[in-house]
Amino acid sequence: MRIAFGWTAVLLAFASAVFAQPPQQPLQTTSGTGFAGAPYSGRETTVTVRTLADGTTTTETFVQLLWRDAEGRTRREMIRHTPSGAEYRSVIVTDPVGGFFLKWTIDDEAARRVMQIWPMAAAQKATATLPSNSPPPARPASTPAFRREVLPPQEINGVYAEGTRTVRTVRLEEESSNRVIEVSNELWISPDLKIIVRHILDDPRAGKTTTELTDVLRDGPDPALFQAPEGYAVLDHRLKTR
View 1 (cartoon, rainbow, N blue to C red):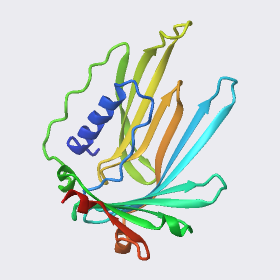
View 2: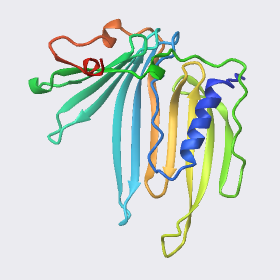
View 3: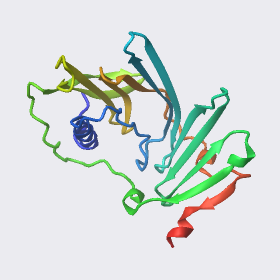
């Protein structure tokens, strides 16, 4: 069995801290910016299912394409649709080596062909490293209102992952029924790729949101994916900070 006490423990502790708070939004997954030596690409799909007051359900799906090169640069391509159904893509390339990130949109509208450059904070520029021999941070004690379990490791879509599940009991005192619900947060992390490969947040108040990484390839992506596109007007926000 593999053990990843350093980075994995830090990310799990962060997730626990986020989960201990009332917000109902799912934890944002990460493409692993700054982690060098582990290039990959994949498809991240987030599905949210909500049950309405009349018993019917709604389903929302959000898809992102992810890449990371051997230097730790990442590209996140978000697939969206206009009200008419036309598809366009928003792209963010984060370059911790150069200390900047790029943003642009891929579509057929000339007016939207603007490529923006933003500076990264000093803390973001440093290449992330996996702590070695670092003891895991203290875990929250189990209580009747909060419990946590370490799940058996498994392969998720071909990627080895280690997981935890945290369950928080919430009493809805604002409701006349004063009912009690359980909010479950399940997080699966790849210690090799240093990314979240599956995240399930099940909150009866907001619905169930499942984010999963599929189609994972460990080959180095095309370097052109991390470069600014041609034919776009350039808006450089770094000039405003000098």
